[in-house]
Length: 368
View 1 (cartoon, rainbow, N blue to C red):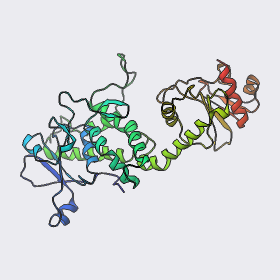
View 2: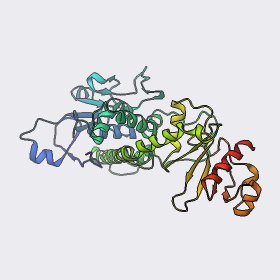
View 3: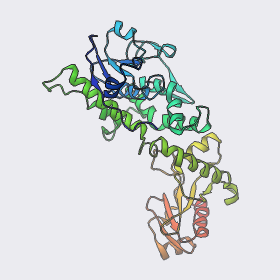
View 4: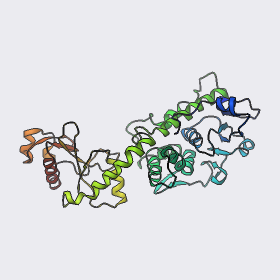
């Protein structure tokens, strides 16, 4: 199984004009019998999330397992290393060179993604399947590996690439309504030495980089709250949920002739799966309402589908004349028995029975 966090490093006593890290265990017990570890280079000085995460990920591969990290900008030192990330002005996977700063670099992940890659994205593009396959304990060619490979890029890696390359999240000239400094790239950036810190030594800088690797790596291995908790969660929960949503999506015509109402026969995380499957399967018309049973109250919910995964607006909110009403007042307004509520925004409502919830969805399709 993969480690949950990056192993701690210790400075070596090498005479090279740069700093090497290596593990205590390798140094104390394996140096006399094992071949020297691979060496992976990145630049010294101020660091960003992409090279910290890239260094962490590449050490999870068989080829660079527990590699020493060399931080330098010296071209002669870089030339002799086994892999180089985010420095050197070269992208050549055949030689394990993964920089993205050079003129003419326009590499993207593919599979429909158009965001230019950072060094972390390059490492993930070339080694992500291996890392995921190890975690799942299956071959790289397994269909689940491909699905998770794309899902983790979309939900986690692409943002790292975009931030590092200065790509705005939205096409607009308007200033943002609020500042967000809580994302991973910002948190890694704050680990750099403060300019007022009296200790600006390379040793202190490398200690900070070690923390950045651990932070980026731990979030990669536990993609919690970014894509429904970790690679393990994807395998045990994400894939089964996708299958449920696909099955229910295929059955939509049996629910209502409009094809715009979907019923979950078992509750699961469904929103992102629905958007992806609609695109993959070219669903037209799109789903407007999703029905599911509330496990606690055993009543039924009818939820309006949002216009996009990151938007609050619904494709077709529940009828405006119902919003804010509850219980008998709502049942009278709808002419449907058993109504419980409709939210003020119209994004969700409830009924005591499945038939009642379905009637609310069907009626709302015909109302403004």
